[in-house]
Image (tube, rainbow, N blue to C red; front, side, top):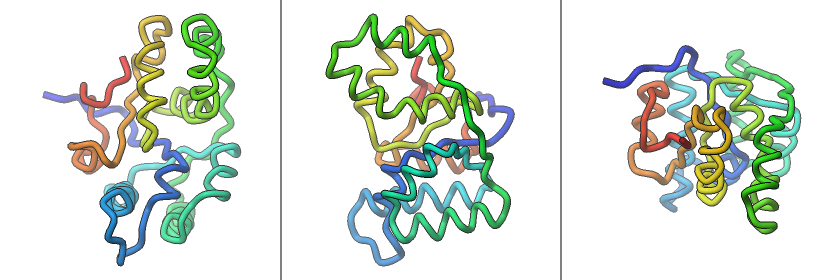
Length: 173
């Protein structure tokens, strides 16, 4: 039996916002991203948003995602925070990752910082970053609590619909 996390909060990467298609979308990824956002709205999860993440969304989000974000703000379902940089993750990536892996992970640490400050759930299309976090998790205890899911992954939409229960398929550690 899965245990549900205490509060239904999730960080959504700008990659999902960029790819979310409208009602007329035909590409599988655009549909999955749109459906993921719609489920977050329907089951009343709260979106975790930092200033840096908002800036990324502003640069890259689709028209559908922009309207969705305005609805989320309108219904007061956005938890705005300014998380501190998680130093253990930064130290570990310098120690255990190659230079190219460090560059890949550094660009998405804003997601990790926000998720660690909130409740540890991330929705992103970036499977490479997830893989790097899995690689670091044995060295950084806090990363083991993260759940990282892609709308393209089987079971992700059901995980969202169930309000983010603990699920080994999406666990980083």
